[in-house]
View 1: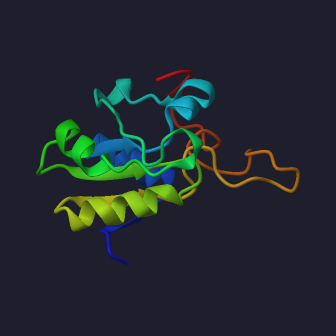
View 2: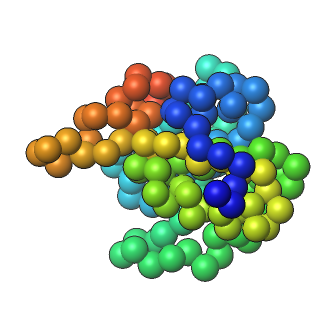
View 3: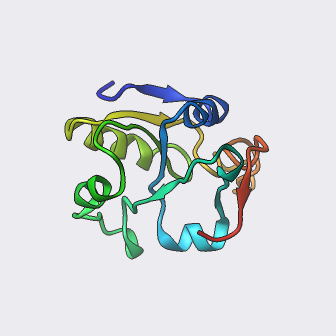
Length: 133
C-alpha cells in the first residue's frame, strides 16, 4: 500500500472529526445528483476535487487543484463512489507529499445483485449527507 491506509466510513468520520480534511474526488455530476457528505455538525468543510472529469477523462490538474484546496500539512481522507478512484487519488497525493487515507466502500458503496447501491458506503451507513455540493 502506497498511502497511509484504508478507513471504514465510520473511521473516516472520526478522522475528519479529529481534524483531517475530507476530499471528495467524484465528478461534479455525482456531487449534484447523488449528494455529498455533510460535515457541518463537526465544523469541517469537505473539499471537492474531481479525479475524473465528465466522460471519464482523467483530471490532469488534480494535484494542482488539490494543493490549492488543502493545507500542505493536512491529513487527507479521500472519498469516491465505491472506494476505487479514491485509492488512486490517495496514492497520487501521497507521492506529492500528503498523508493520505482511502475510505473503503466510498459514498454509495458496492451495488447489490440488482445493481442498486444500497449495501454499504457513507450514505448507507447513515453518516450525514445532503443533496448537492
